Image 1 (cartoon, rainbow, N blue to C red):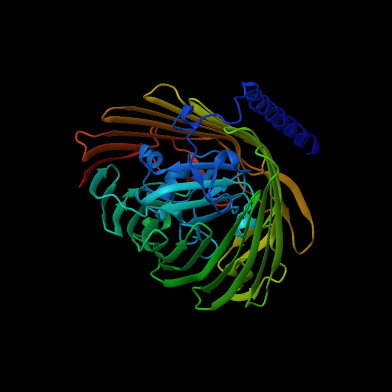
Image 2 (cartoon, helix red, strand yellow):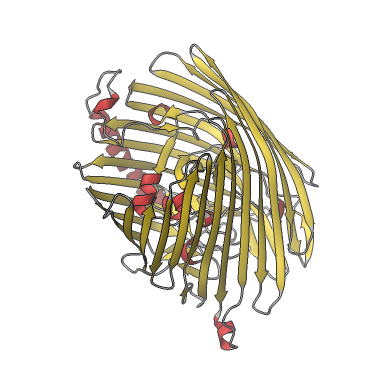
Length: 632
């Protein structure tokens, strides 16, 4: 076994060295003067101001972390129907999906796996945690109401708290809506209708989107119908500093097993989930504050007609203040969150999470900047409370205004969720006394360069997570969580370029070596390190635009895939590669009209989206939508 692992490590090391040679060779581009004029750069490199990475606006080249921004224009080109669609072609991002188009099966949530960690991404909606019951389902968020998505890879717990082990995904909705109506239809029962308008400071988006029944969606022969999404997104901008928003997303799905079909059942195992979020946000040049409320109401009807309900709520607030000095900045703030969870057995649990944080940024000279930050977090209100301190340091060196390197090192954490603390054993709830906070360490070395006709980003990373909180199994009488270990190292490389005035190309490559190790809490015995998720990804995006016509082709290839076996002591299990393909065509016969065609799984492959211990789940077969938009 050790010899085998040495061979794997040598292979991965060779791949990483090759990647470093490619990334390092970029340094041989002739460096321009420090005050290079941004007007010479392409639209790719006209640097957007990014907020998520530092909690205040900075240019990407000045940030000591790997950052990716997906704009509303990118989302439209992709033909994405949800936030999940919008990010599934991102670098070092793997989809672990259960149902059609990323739909979840009750609490079996489809996940975004970042850098080989399935529970390492903190998802924010307008800067507010989107998770409820410790999970999220971004397939419910309609893509057309998204202004931009900022993805920050690497540990982000210092600025954003629990869950940001390997990254932060901040989904920012539109504060000013477009005025249009839309209708679309496709194969396999696909239907869509939407309307959006802006009237003064008030904006609204209302949408309906569904897919019909797909057959044999997993290896056990399930037939899956839905999801049916209903969305209402409202916002009111009182002035430039203060705004209010309300979001209500409903999804309904059901599946039928072979056993159900054998006895004539045609619509069973129904899940009806409604999520709501209300926010009040204030910001000026120095002060920012937000208060929010969110809930998730899950109804389930089983195949024998039994009904159960589960309810999660979360409300809280955060604030921060920024001081500017001649050679630096000081940011300080805090968060308070109250969580409520009612199980389907009608048992209620609550707790309150507190945290304070600070970050100091110092510029030694126009080229060199150092950033140090820290966060103290603690919980109260349950039989088992936790405390954690995390810290991070960054050093950024700018060769000129459009080229930089950075070094980032720090720690991150994830607090055990309420539903993980209270295990179900033999129908009774038992406090998981031995469950510990998940803690990680990370180091990242990166290089960024903006060119006349594109941009280059590359990062070498290492991460080690101790006590990774893992779902250890479920039977009719038992549902438990435990702590395991995880580690990964690798390289990411992104290149975007304008090939011509009409043709744009982007590619992303990631090579890594994610592994997990099972730990038996009763005996203390540790298993062998096992590969998990994907070790190689190569994505391509090609866009052609000419006058009234726009065409986009997107591909995402993942190889060296392994099933996640961190919750068992079994040996690692390899999975065949997957290839996601997407084609989106748009034509505008008039300035106020648009006709579009979007096709997912263009090649009609039957790829595995996720493999559990009991079944393989497949990506949806080839599906398409043909739609029409009328702007007014």
